[in-house]
Length: 330
Image (cartoon, rainbow, N blue to C red; front, top):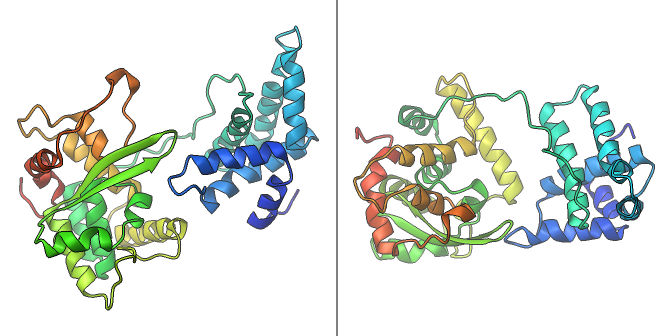
């Protein structure tokens, strides 16, 4: 298998087998729009097909073999799938591949078995090592990025993500109709009530600060004949939009004189880090609220988190907002 299979051929291959169809259904179910991204499908199906080639078995045969192994008395015989995965992973390490690609390949196979209710007994999937510790994005860094950005769409997108902490896919899915009435009402900050589905459905609130709201409004006014069902930040797809945005950030990082590449994930971390070090003096402003604003599932040990009213959330957001404003001295 020297050539890399196309996405179409990978999907056609996966749809051939009951076990991979079940796997695909599980991946789609975890997405809010009911459809796993093309990038996810490539990242999972490609290593799975390579693993099947290594094993000399198709996906359905792997599942049938695993079921047979469960009935064996010897615990070592029951670990045939795990031993094969470890042996295959060892061959990947011998090749000139990125550590992250190897880790993702390992995890893809584990995901396949889990989707077929026959999870592998592994301690932990290999980590994406070596870890590269990137600097923490500061308010000065953010200001430099905004000043280097020439296009209004890039300025607005950067500022809105930094002041909301939204994941880039959630941000790119927002539509003009979600903000038009708020603008008409003279809102200085924008509010969104969102729903995300990963392992489980999560509902949460999010805000754009005063600075990003002004920048977004200026950008939208520069567009002509904008329909309510259009996205705030048009892109051909969420996948392409995410990649293009990271490419933009990479170029702006260089222009701003940074010796590292800022990514959309760094803007999200900027929101989290800035607020978690803020001390507005109100006990209702805590890490649980910040995690809620970011759409994270809270640990079960924390129990059910009851968010304050939207009005109270906005009050708390305003208290800490200067930490998110690169033009504020506070």
